[in-house]
Image (tube, rainbow over all chains, first blue to last red; front, side, top):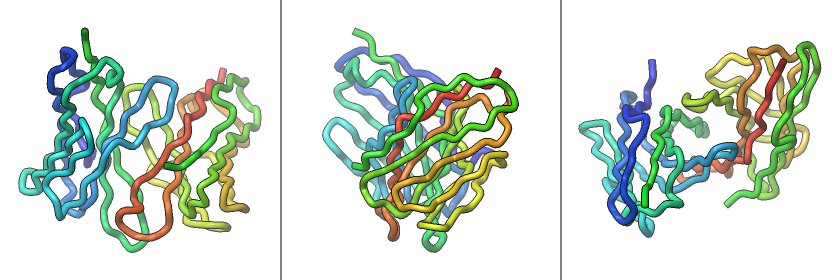
Length: 114
Length: 115
């Protein structure tokens, strides 16, 4: 049973426009969420995170929104740039003592076109 | 951000060979992790460590083994590689502590192909 779901395997956005990547989760114990970006043949790069005590976190062009009641989070990229073309993974962790295991979604491939 | 290194980046070997995938980090992070990822799929945790001489199996069963003799080093070993082990292996680390230290930083990965 997949606890973190990214239902859109791919997304195409024009340069300069907003990219919105979505993520849903089922485990109500998750309280910390992260977004990673991954280029082919490279490891994931941390982008931005949000704690469940917040509903929004912003870092430059990247903003993450969290809707706890809907168990949904989204990543907004504004404005989108060609270099943003990559696979984006949503991840979540639950408070279990000192554990910090992450559960990942299957990723969304973003293509930013000129 | 962590500096974390993996070698080799690519490895093609025959069935039955013993291999070790290396992972080192220079940030002094206590926690280290190994993930396995197939194309188009999510990352699956196969091993993790909370410090020297601490190793645990992850959520996905794996025939590989790990060791943590030094803080900075977390190698993964396959005693007898099989084609089913073909995958990308990603190493990550994070600081000890709680909550904001859940952020894991990844190495570049090793793409393993077993013929």
